[in-house]
Image 1 (cartoon, rainbow, N blue to C red):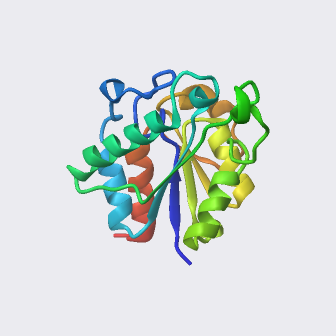
Image 2: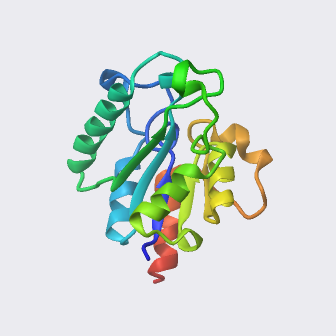
Image 3: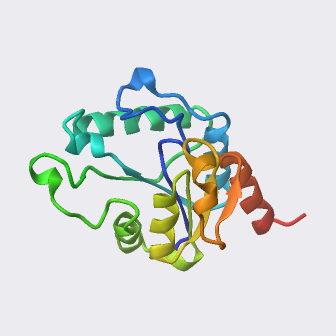
Amino acid sequence: MKRAVFLDRDGTINVEKEYLYRIADFEFISRAADAVRLLNEAGFLVVVVTNQSGVARGYYTEEDVENLHRHIDRELEKTGARVDVWLYCPHHPDGRGSYGLPCNCRKPLPGMLKEAAQRFDIDLKTSIMIGDKLADVSAGQAAGCRTILVRTGYGADQECHLPEATAVFDNLLEAVESLSREINPV
């Protein structure tokens, strides 16, 4: 079985911007691409799991989400980094049509992580969820993963609500560097 690092997108990889879908508005958090490359080099499967309620609310389409993910892939490639799997939840309880139905993929539920584990032979117990919200941490814990909160995005405001077992770092690169030290102690 594979070990994965599950990453939230908005506020963890890229600068938090409400309902981001336009390529022109995308901006990496400083050194986030380097962090993804380090995860690749360490042999982790990198899986992005992101709630995209803007689809359910009618602000943008699933095609817009997928176009943005392709753009991020191209930008990551410039630094020698890659995301292995992109998963997103387009649902929201207040959404329109079929997107307004209850789902098990919207974080804090662990559906996206469990789907990835089943599809890509991932061992959730040896995997890690990194995000900037309590919903990310809750999804990771519900899936049986180790959890890390980063203070970028909404993380600094959510730190006081965390379960004890969750590590906290200023940003994705610091979190990944810590993981790298565990894997390859000096």
